[in-house]
Length: 404
Image 1 (cartoon, rainbow, N blue to C red):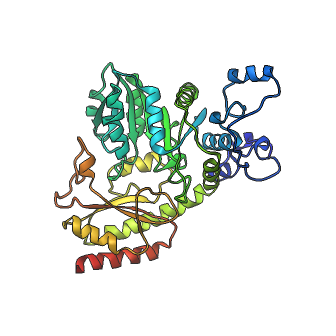
Image 2 (cartoon, rainbow, N blue to C red):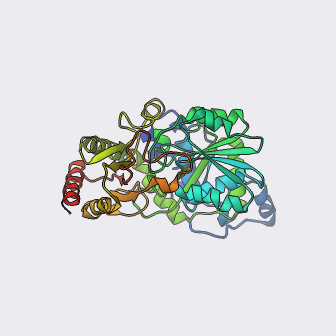
Image 3 (cartoon, rainbow, N blue to C red):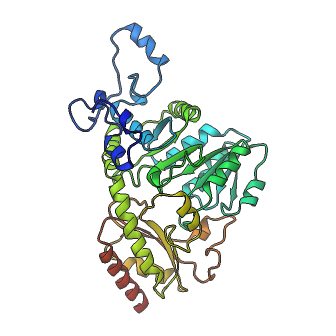
């Protein structure tokens, strides 16, 4: 394989196999080798002087700008993100969020943040950005008029997430991004849940799309990394700020991310199918008040998911009918095939207790139309186990919860 130019019009599965495998980076082997290097050597002082003038992936300079292993990953991620001019890597998903916002915002600016954002994003708005003189205003992404009314002459960026963290509402991302652009603000989407395979964010009008590669791309719960992709102008700004901050990821981690990327399509399809089967089963159980799964008809924003998304993943939530936090925790403790832990997107299934009310400013919890007593929830990350085995495990945990 000499280059990747023939992949542009290919299907996702084909692009995932070939992207980033340029011959100059792989040589005679299949995968780009792990290039561990801090120092890059030059043939002469003339070449040394030329180095700073050419700042691009594929050109050796110094270890902070990466080498073929990191460049191959960036190339592959850009290849699967329609409309992207380039991709910047960060040492975690939170670092990607911080890197993007620190690129876009200055003291005195206003950031609009979706109220159902990932908690570290919310904490960043209330902490780091506040300390730097940036005001964060939270908004309900399902209320377009109220969202539009929040803009002012100081609004510079909007942070979106679809579906929302924990409560899984899907918003009208194209409309939110369009309003932001009309108001002169940059729209940023945390697209970790769907990835570019399930939602082509830039094609839908978003300006910057980011992912926690820790999740689906890594796929094996052994990697921390994030990424941000954008068009030419914003990509150049993101790259410059990342370099000013000294942001770099290790070639070993980049190699793990590349390995995970090759099977991303297959894993997402399996996890999505299993999650939908489990969500449908849960929706028929008398113990369950609401199943919060974007792929399930009747879920909040399902019509937007059906219109705009081409895929899903294994992450969704549900709430119990009545009960209390202690009984919910007994259910989780009784599970045998689900681990208890943060993160998601790995090959193994996980369960986590959730209390979204602690992380909301203007959105209701329980979800609209829900009974106030039905507030104790569980987030499931469905892995690659057989879905029938997972359902049986959930069923026995429900029985043990009720019998305690």
